Image (cartoon, rainbow, N blue to C red):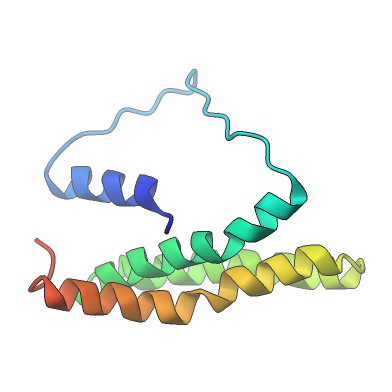
Length: 118
């Protein structure tokens, strides 16, 4: 559903590739309406959760760090938005966080079905 950018970087690094950082490179996402952004929150959370599940299936502790970092960011923003009465933003955060459990399980099951990831 999402997270393919993180997945390809993860696979490249696992295969021994080097990734060069350049501060001159800028990537822009296409502008989204509020409705479109709201519609993508589940898939974004699902992608992060699936990626974490794949890592956890490999017994890679980074899966836990990825989940913790993503959750912490969204929880912090959820609290901030709730304090400011931004209920649309708060709902987006809840949607993103709600996708994590089913997607982590999906990632673990997928890795297990493939015999784990190399």
